[in-house]
Image (cartoon, rainbow, N blue to C red):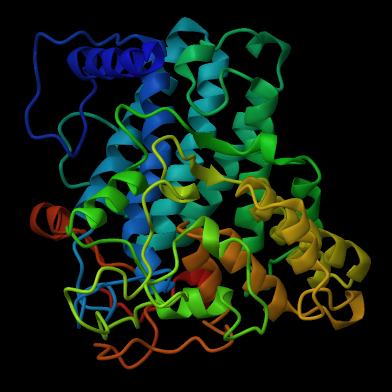
Length: 469
């Protein structure tokens, strides 16, 4: 409880005393201090970054068909225009605080805070650019009340993220950074600099692997970053402390109270119940309960509820107190299981089949262990002939299929789907879809189009981002 109260206190302190101008803010307090508590900023950014992942996943999980709307013709289900103002606003407020933390830490010569700021800036910025493409960055945090910053090119944003990661690693590797971070204010790694360095390398591996369609792609570079990243689930970047509860838990509670949300897509359910791949995945019971009919059944994206409305449990949704939706379930940004599949893909692309197959199986095992799947069930799954195909029969489709399940409710799954051209077995366009093909990018929020419209790039939701070409 003390940790929750400290988070509330520090968040209030940051709000009261932060004086740097945010281009998202309209009003400013001329009496506010320009020197906010550095630990308060750390608490704020390490708490909000996982929430930013959640806010964006609340949109992208419909594009990846993890989730489906119970209403026919759902906006996100059918690729209609969506207004992701909450995700955009939270990401930019977090990046503003990261910018402030970096500046204040520089003035106080607290370099560890600068290193963490660089790494989290790279995470938030890359997450934003992977959803929207061109985004404001170089002019977004300059102060002076600039409410209409220009947008940075997607490729330059990507390069900036890699540079931030490398700088963050260099800073945190310095002996002068040791012992600086206030551990209780670091909700992700509790002040552990080695853990932050592993997260930086894991994020670098993700971004280097993301450009698999580009001639610049280097499996060697990806694997070099992997080698310095996560090695176990204990390394995962996540939070488990919440003011009230995990936001997916709140969505599940809303669902139980008939505020309908977080219904599982038919595609995800069929990919894990044995219908598509011929093997039942023991992670599915950790996510949802069976229907009243005693089976696992999802909702077709775009088609909405199938059955009689007053029936209690005709289709599956994220239930209360399941692994992703319990009060203190982890809210994740990067995991060991994801990194194992990054390793498997890069090794496969470079012809290192032994390493690829070992990493593929390790990714499945890490994901299942994290979800508290019984050891006997894990063994049954990974020895099933549909899964244990041997190194010579391993394919990219199989690696991506398993990564899809392991990155459930993570926006990175949409990055994977786009660069893999939605080439997942049985994956189809939603019912009543508004576009002629799969969606490739998110809409800019109304707050930008109304306030900064002159700088918002022209786009279509079917436009491929630079790394998706």
